[in-house]
Each structure stands twice: as structure tokens, then as C-alpha cells.
Image (cartoon, rainbow, N blue to C red; front, side, top):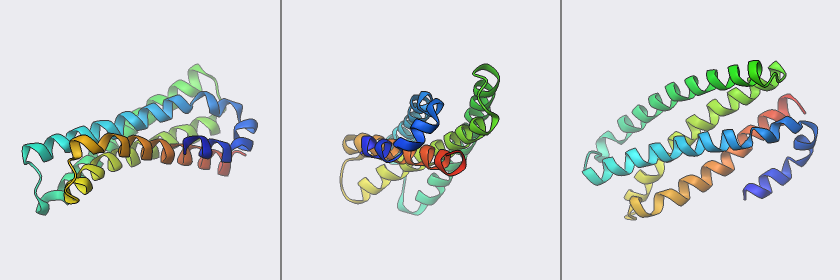
Length: 153
């Protein structure tokens, strides 16, 4: 699916060559954020720390953590891309904002999938990883290239 997403943005990639150099960063950061959130949620589920009546509260806590982590990573990426790599400021803004959206989205998917699997009577410790990773890769690429295409191509 990731290859299909990349192929659908082939023209944008050809027009904005520098965008391809940052694919590993946005993919890795999204993957890390989603995996961390999933691990925390699976651990909480297995420890019995999550009950049906506090699921929303737990998701809200994960969102707050995602927001803070995303803001910090966004600021660092903006500074590094603009001052060290000397990229166009508009590209740096779009790349950084993409990272922010990708990390928040990935964290929420990572938090939500184990809860959903548990409610479906599927062991979240076994099934969460592939769902979170695959979903975050596809959505992360869509976010990144959609924003680049809309604002720069």
C-alpha cells in the first residue's frame, strides 16, 4: 500500500526532489510514536489498568503526550532542516507540520487499536503491531505528500 501511495504522488516527488530525502524521518517518527503509544496501551490493558468507563480519559492522556512530543520534534526538525540543510523555508514549514500531524495521528492510532482489539476479544499484545505499523505508514505518507502537493507542487 505504501508503494501505491508513493506512486500516486510520483509527479510531486519528481517536482520536489528534496521531499524524498525526508521520507525516512517522517516514517520513523510516526512509527516510533505509534509503537510507543501501542506499547503503553497494551501494557495498561494487560495490567488491568483500563476499564470501559475510563477509555476516553486514557485516550485523552495519550493525545496530550502526543501533542507535546510532536511540538518538540516539529521545532527540532524545523530548525535542523532550515538552518543545517538550508532548505526553502516553506518546505521546512510543511515538512515540520506534516511531522506534527503524522506523530499525533500515529499516537492516537497506536492508542486506539489495542482498545479496539481488546473489545473484539483479540489479544492486543499479539495483533496490535502489524495494524499500527501498516496504518501509520500509509496514513503518514498520505499526510506528508498531500500537504507537499497542495502547498508546493
